[in-house]
Image (cartoon, rainbow, N blue to C red; front, side, top):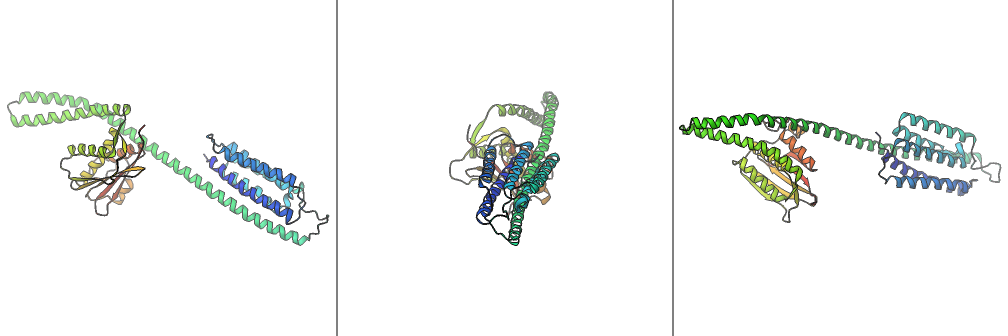
Length: 416
């Protein structure tokens, strides 16, 4: 679907240029050529064109979409007014007769086939009628003694000026229209990618929900069996210690499944605001509980008050995924930085791992693509998808000092 609002805006610009040019042509015809031109007939037509352009420009500020029939009507109005001007200014003998081609070219580039044929038919009809019905600019039988060669030279010069202006106007419009179409194509491509990503995310969520439901039964069975084994082998201290550890791990898995379902409900019902420093510190503490072998440094670059961040479980989990990825690459000497400006918060993680290859950098963020030698390849995809919900972004770079630099950006919003 064409962007007729942008096309109509460009058409209003073309009208402005045309109106200015026609006013200059009228002045030149009256004072330069001493033409027999009735300003009381030409003036109202120019005023109507100016009023139409003003109404069109004001209409573009309304929320209503510009439809194809409306844009077609605008082009018909232009051709009618151009025809009226040319009728009073020499008809087909006027070198600016090719001005009628501008609406036709615009219609050919923006409208559907049936409207193009209608515009073509109207252009031919107006041009044909102006061959026979018009008011001549200069009457050779009056007191003005113009030589035929001088008039011919003026006509040739006018045709050259008209050709130059037509080329400029058409080229400008076509270029702007192509840019508009390219922007629209880019938006469609982004929407298509987002739709595919949403489908992939929905598939992952469905599989996760199904897996969580299916894991409940075997975990319960394992807990019961482990409890019985503890009673049966209470005298075997080594085995009892292992059984208690297994029981503890199955209990953690069971609690994790319950927390996952509960956190989704709480996230939809409540909104928690934390300053950016507190959020990162809490996330690092949770990260160290999972990865006690990690060594790190944490620095906050600005010295002013940290901005508030809308803290949710999914956002925390996204940051945890990135920290875990860095720890998987190299758990030692991880550098964590927090920075912000008036618009965004920046969270950076620099690990000392092997970095990322060019092939991996092209596929980062896609599902089932992992930057590690192991894993399912969905952690970074889920992280990127979650951050996109908050209008954020995550990017991975090869750091100049070695390793990988992971940078998260989140927009700063006011509390509501």
